[in-house]
Length: 122
Image (cartoon, rainbow, N blue to C red; front, side, top):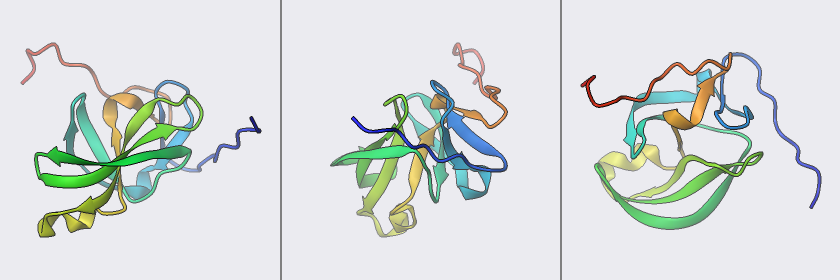
């Protein structure tokens, strides 16, 4: 196995919660209005230090999409997914973009700015 090269980002960033590898710059954030099995998720134009897994069709709340899980290159944890194909015309804007699950990342300063609900919040 070769040497692992990770990209270090400048400015405000989001990092992997497990190993603190940089994943995305705040400037690449498109939307915070997404959800996943583990809670909130953010849509990004680009991410770094991830590997893309095999493509699969998934039925989501907004319709059927062809997506691939993305894995942190440093710790191999699943951190989100990539939208490859959106079958609904209204969802085409997602194609080529990335979802990072909020529970799997921290802000650039290393502070978890989220909490896990015990069910009493909402």
